[in-house]
Length: 191
Picture: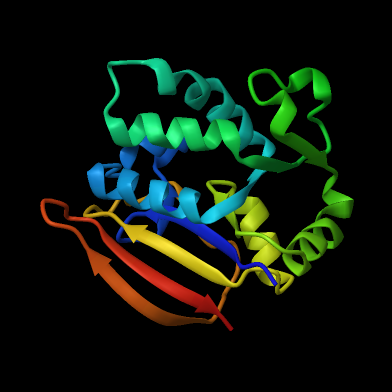
């Protein structure tokens, strides 16, 4: 049985992006990057909604060869390029796949729960969901998410897109901090 882990960065007041959809309002520092790499290395499937997939596909594939990025970001890019991706979308087609064409599978929203349940029942590493807050909230409500890992940033945004779309009960597993970072990781089990 595989574990489905949602990992995301949130503000102190619970937003995963700032006003106007600004994801860069969050403190994506060395701790955030190091933890994302750690999670990617433990996973063999990356689960994304269409919007996050298109954003990731437009950025990550070429970072691996770009000397302007540090070793951690290049390692994230390398792993993103290798790992299987499952994208839940009713509008994305094979024509919308570019750099990740060989490693990406598109699943319709109506088939998502069954497909993800089948993935979880199989063998392999973790299934990791980044971004994609509508998708992971749907999966959380359906009982398909095992853990939620939230990197809590050191700012209150006062508005934006809330991380959660409905009330949810979680059980804290542990917390982690990093030297030189004001971010705090809180790992939860879904009840």
